[in-house]
Length: 326
Ligand code: CP
Ligand code: NVA
Image (cartoon, rainbow, N blue to C red; front, top):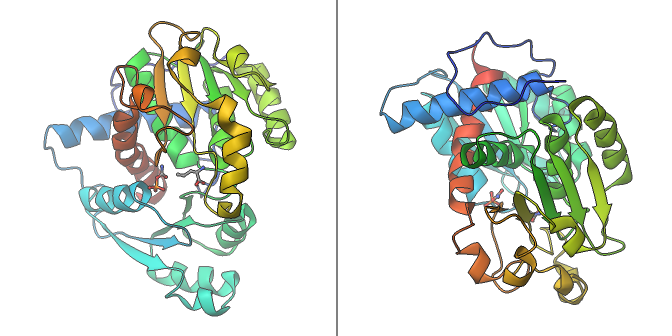
């Protein structure tokens, strides 16, 4: 079984061999690689807080392609590259020839001649897979319909900072089980020895193939992945409570229908009384107060959502450094 993840800053350890050129899903990363990224994120965070220069990516340029809106992802990648001594260039898909039908294949090949890395936020996960296949530079997933791995690395960092460990904790996720956050949380939890309980309405369960693969990965770290329709069951004695919007980007036509279906899955004070007394609440944001979570919880003493948002910067800098530093 893998060692518990430690909170304390470790002396810069040798970088493990990274099996992947890209950062597309958490599942493609080993426990050792995730541990390394979290250690690096803590180191980079400390350097930034102390005002120490950390120009590991001097002169490097990251392209950022967005096919969906973003506040956190765009700003944290852009600022992260700047703090690492490089720069980021924002590429709206509307302005690229990609938006007029140029192939992903040709776009990936051309951008690989200019850039040192590319971050993409898009719809189908297959789009980013195809891009990565044809790009010779690292490709980082800034959110697809089915995965949000950079967010989950930031979530793990936030949990370890607040709880001192990851292994042995119980996380619950209440809401849309079939979205990017639920899937990446499942994949992340089993890599670090956390149990994850997902409560979602019938028809909104997590993707079966992702759950089965995670359950298999969890055999090594002693993590359980449990699906239920009962939010009360999922949250019982949880250390970490997570939710996300009921309607993800791209599903806007379903907003009203989903509001009715998901109402029993609201994270509120009554439900949270079933969690451990010292539970922490996470939400990747943007949040809708009064829908998936009440203001009392989101703005209350258990909420760590703004630490979580800040940690996007530090976790992503660790990814950028690991993939782009020569
Ligand atoms: N959590 C997150 O990815 O936020 P943005 O959509 O603002 O980038
Ligand atoms: N599940 C949400 C996450 C937003 C960061 C969405 O895809 O809209």
